[in-house]
Image (tube, rainbow, N blue to C red; front, side):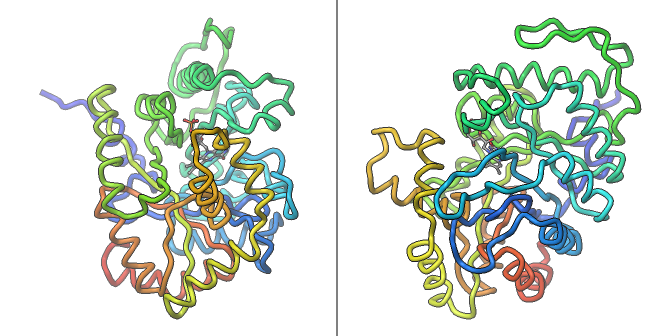
Length: 380
Ligand SMILES: Cc1cc2nc3c(=O)[nH]c(=O)nc-3n(C[C@H](O)[C@H](O)[C@H](O)COP(=O)(O)O)c2cc1C
């Protein structure tokens, strides 16, 4: 009797970096946008220049990061910084980096309402070829209504967006895998005799990611994707609190969809010589130099400003967005940073996307001082 290869077996077979057997997989987050993940006016936050994004990608490549994940963003959040207002479009960004890097997994973040699935399938395939099979497609439905409306599309109700995304990814998957021309007559898309050649290098099709946190989003991820994300709850920032979430997501995928998924988290790193200095710097770039107006605009657009969020929680939420896109806080000395990353793997998490406030200089320091500790600990 032959055992049918699972999707995870297939991806291990095609050797996509996110399916390697390291204990700790790493990535960068939002290196394509001004500000990166830090909503602050301090010196050294990321600029949207090719030179800067390329230098971060090269550092990630040298450390064999499994994931360089850009953010799909079409307009900024105002305030003094107009946070994320300048930036590179994700498909073309990944195509450029495909030629300039050798090992890192290259993610493309695609807002469903901004690109037709036939085009997305073709562009993603092209990047898979440029990069030698390192592409991953991050499917986002879009929560920032003003940027979706830039495309002349009306923002649909929340769960309907995931229905559109389901049709969108079904079409892409068929284009990537079917021998016959694709015909599709859905509620949102009508496709007649669509063809795609060549096929992506990753067979049967490239790695898929989604980072939805709602029930509809989590079901979408569990049903369709290979890499999903858990978020960091305010006031629940301990590795122990995460284990339950990770287990629950993996259980959902296994029980309801018969699938194995990789669960990641995004985190921000504030590293100094002492823990006290790290905490002081965090306080400085968030409380004293943070762009609280941009953060207010961001959380309001995300729908977090509803009355169900008490003022205190809201303030804390903004703090974490300013500090690093509400990621898991990793604050302290190089040893503490390494230990926290190792502790995160003990929760069953498969990978961690990182960002730093002064992206270039802080990531360079991580590469020299902290990364070797992870290698010595045997997790990389
Ligand atoms: C790691 C990560 C990457 C994300 N990338 C983007 C992005 O590039 N663009 C975007 O509009 N939303 C992005 N999101 C938001 C999610 O796709 C999702 O819409 C959000 O978490 C809300 O969940 P929901 O859609 O299930 O309500 C990201 C979230 C995470 C955690």
